Image 1: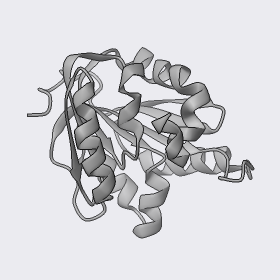
Image 2: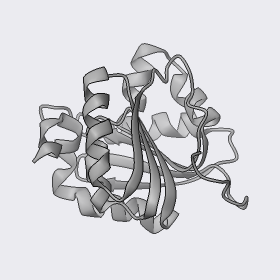
Image 3: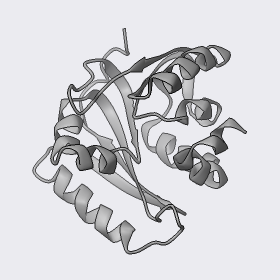
Length: 189
């Protein structure tokens, strides 16, 4: 299975169905997704509640991975594209229903402190899902869930965003509604 080839998606395999239910029970089906620091996550499209012919833009900094995904996306019922992007340097300008930052913020914060908040604030998305690992690659929890809950609370402090947390084995997630009470804008162009 291709999803098992990447550490983050391999850890999510046992909970894949529950993971996307947690997200889409809150957001409802979406017509456009921006997957930032995507890794192999686009291969999980069959588990996502996407409307037919939804637009899916996968962004990653790895050129070889992006080339593979750009080809692989053609097998799904989406208008898919993968593109190389350095989101530390520039926030993607695309408008979307849902932006995914799955286990991405900690990596970005190691490159530049504060970039997580700036990225979330700059995203043109109604919904943003931010997740964090709750175990190290060696399988130890080390208090990671508590640490990342506090980290996300600081990241979202002072914003008008509404958010809900969920936790599944190995992953802590936050579903953020950046536009509570505002009409959803048009999808990715």
